Image (cartoon, rainbow, N blue to C red):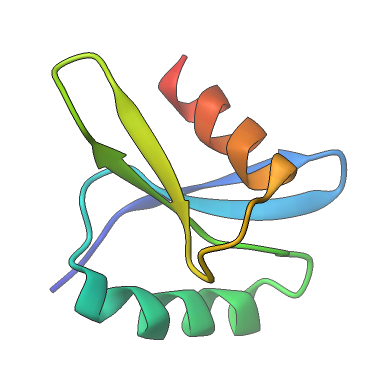
Length: 77
């Protein structure tokens, strides 16, 4: 299964942001692959739609990431 993402640069640190829901069972493998592929990536973000107008940005490692949050917000604007 193919999942689409956008690569966002937040002041020199890259964040791949998945735009559509990715099953949790697939997230770790995708994050590992992208972190190896993009050496400047510090985190991988997955957007989860909560309501019609609200999203949640979940980082691959479950951590709080300011750059990941900024990249996710940029994608949604």
